[in-house]
Length: 256
Image (cartoon, rainbow, N blue to C red):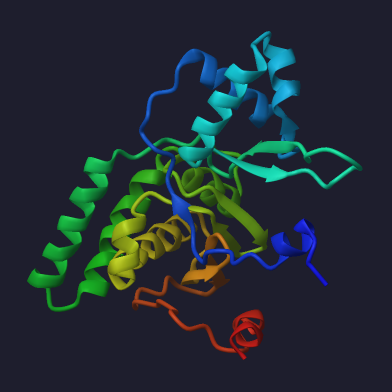
């Protein structure tokens, strides 16, 4: 028996780990207006015809803008469930972090070079990376609103620098984008410890010292970060590349 389109979609392989941060491609006013329509829908998928009608655009023009947003990882396209005869409509929605501050490719290349330099010039690259993250975290503390809780502050600041964080539970985040994705894939022990230092230092600076762990590329479309409150800041490098069954039972079952 032939599988339906819906069955085929369910069996599709989802890449582990986050997307790159939003690309540094300037948007025209017309394309930005299309993206704004998607963002205002708050995650609900829209048809091209709906957006075209709202903006007074020709539907073919709207489709062109939508395809460009999909290519730039600012939106995603899915197929509507069949409703009888005819081709199912294509639906669009904004991607998590799609309107975040973009990092240029030249800065991503610079990050790669700096990571290589750290690996070659220091005895303990992971500890050096964590200390760099501490410095970054202290700078980010300057922009925290006075009424924000420690975890709300982490949400806000990670979003502003392009991680598209989603707090999935108290002390746990999924990072759907990574400003330094290429470098992180090659050297997670350095890049991810920088990010760990950022989160740990922010939480400590806001009165919630925690043991922070990062699980790189552990989730479909995201990395996972956990923060367990502790009496004092934990400064030893903690990078979990293969979560244990107690830390992440879903991964064990997936690999079984």
